[in-house]
Length: 170
Picture 1 (tube, rainbow, N blue to C red):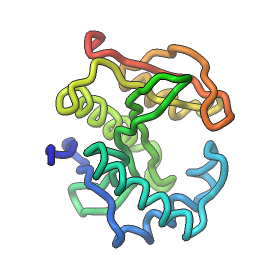
Picture 2 (spheres, one colour):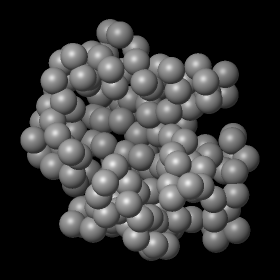
Picture 3 (tube, rainbow, N blue to C red):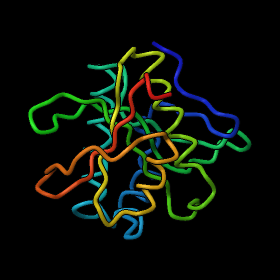
């Protein structure tokens, strides 16, 4: 297995069954899930966990948990996920930080580490992030990740801005 992303403050790691309480907490939080179709029940959080573990097995990557190095505290999740966007296969840099840790730079730090992982470990030429137009905070993270707005796409029956960055842009 490839070494997962780390930053000065953060470590990304695979999620597993022992992380279900944290996943339930973040996936049921109304603030965190504001731009998702709904808040998740405990049963749906188990499905989320199973989906990520399946991605690790099939692709070697997916969404990982983000923990602070200083104390091992879980602050969110971020990773690289294969997405079909308007008939094309893309690697998406996704990120979700628990609301109690917002405005500390964790999302940007984790997203940049995931972008670099995709370029350096997965050897892709471009990555994207899909963000609803009203989600200004996530758009700021994408801009800090050197991404630029590319196009408006339909994803899960909602408008999303597709931000992209190419290896050659850095």
